[in-house]
Image (tube, rainbow, N blue to C red; front, side, top):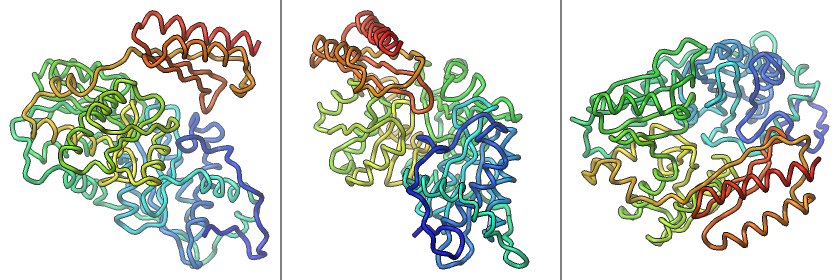
Length: 465
């Protein structure tokens, strides 16, 4: 159970989240809320929340390669130590690696300092529980309430009660060994030419190691971080450099990770990008053939392409959709006994192996599918699914208004849905962090659905005024 600070037994108000969004706290580094002061309070609150029976909590802290990571790491560690906790530092390491190490070392919580695919000037804080899963919204709300409670700072330890910090010297090796263990033991990658793009991020060392230790001929790009170049023209959001290198090296496969390596984009031997939806289809087929796809179901978000749903239905696999965010995919998987899901953006969750999206574990599964089928990735991707044209229009409006209070826009959406029928799909939602309306439409003709999406966005702008 979570504990509130102090000894009076007074209860905290009903917690609500203000700082935490769909994937932790995020913002411009050294501007509120991504300041050392906030980080210190996060460290202190997580330590108190994680304590059981009064014993000192053990907190794993990892980060990516951003310059501001040093500042926030120090502040978080100070908050943990002030509450008598023990800090275990990993240095730059993928987000899923922290989740794994929390479990492996029986720690009480994990903290990741990363803004994932954002540019270097941003940073973020993500929290994991002792089970290696991202904390649910309710737990993050409790931690926020603790951060705001003035009694938290009055509960700091003194004398021998002050905590300490130490480096986990073999954290990279632990994670590399774990990732390799998810690759079929009977297979090797001898003769396979692979280009690995580390996005100058958290996986810049471990990603090339995983493939080379399995026998692949590895070319590594995006592996020279300087604190400012994370995600800059490299990585999952910018696969152009990877595609060019795959063609230049005549490689069989290209692997692109994002800044914290929890998502994956793949490039085939022809230099073509294979996104998360196609990868989910490839892996679901293989898992079904092996008899290990739980309940013959894949979990994806509302953003996954209609083509994925149709491809899975053709092999009698169901698709369950959730809200956008890999945490919601994982929650649905855990609640219903599913073991595979992900996002179009490349967050792929293999729950039999990991507790969160892991770009390298996903890469292991894709590579295993190639090796066992003895087919090039382009062939696997072409047969995996037929993508339905999809457009996304983002429009920044003057204010946010619940969609149920926008009758004109809703009426137009219903009209478009009726026109598309079973051949398409309409999704209108607000951004989770700003007054930006996102209009996504799928249908048989790209020009038509582009016009429809723009009309809905324009109608929403007029309705809000």
